[in-house]
Length: 277
Length: 171
Image (cartoon, rainbow over all chains, first blue to last red; front, side, top):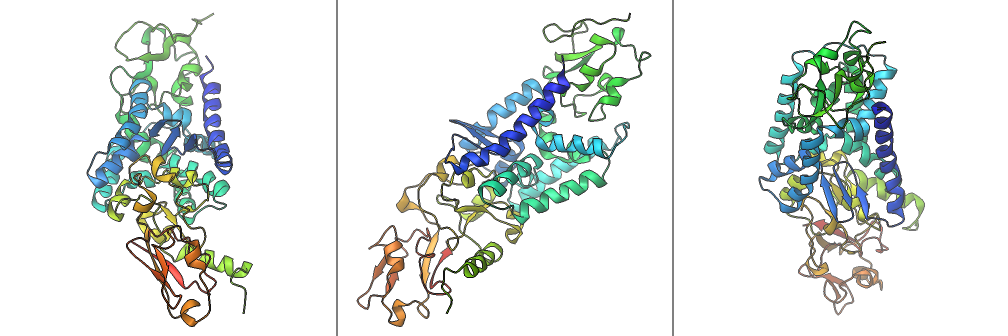
């Protein structure tokens, strides 16, 4: 399966959607509208889980409207994992583009990345509680990047607020180690990673068929998140992008799987067997 | 004297309100501290407004950057009541037109033409609650009744005085 091509198609599709939507608002279309903080599709309301959570924390009250909007995105993350990050988020696309332009090298995930991720998420949520404002929503990169076209196309100009926050994120993206905002700091992504359960879609590694002596550990080198799919924990931040599955030179040794308990290769989503010549 | 609607004046006005005016919250907004806690700045109210009245606040709003505001000097609220229904967080709650409380119009009696003895009833005619929210007294001067004024700001851009002799104070 050409997961990489499918994923690019999905990412650009969502990017185009948020570029086209503001033009339709000008014509009065509001059946499908919103941004990646909250999207309305007909009667269905979708709310980014961490934005909703931050809002609940800020007012210390659980609103029914808000809660019901969070249900479907949370379910998606519980079943398919943080696919939002790799298949939907336009900041992810931009961040991957930066990786390519800056020709960044692959390196092992530093040990401080995990602690940084959770303390930053906790810190932002606590600061939200202290200030009484959903700051996690304010600094959400997918929100900013989808609000921007609306401001430019629908309102006729970007605001200093959106541009300023995006500017800060861009500087962090360039100055800090590879994709640090995406991998460790983004509250949206961290929350989705937190929602990973034992049976959530993941990348399963079958050791007997793995033959790194063929081309080296392609999976680790090609991973846009610097994760080694062979030795990863559930909270290491894998977003199920599928790059390692597609690039695996020993065919079936990496594949999508619901849960990683069963040792035999999974059925259903598995690839055709391509063993050595 | 420059015409109040000259391009130069309009741009100065919009610059002024973009950077220094506080702006009003959209109709149906919860009390400000709850509003700030609930609003996730998703932009759905902004996108739903057919008049483009709802803008996103800038850095002058501090941590509330990105929250929706209405600047009646630029575009007032026409009370179409679409935006309260599209808010996903409950920061805006559905209300009736009469129940809206965005602010309260205040007339500057020093610059208002009617108070200066010039016949003018532009604000009275623009008011959607004409006869209750803005009334004319026996001297034909406009008098705002805070009990009925919802703060939509429709009276602001029509005021011929320069600067406007009527403005809306956020409630």
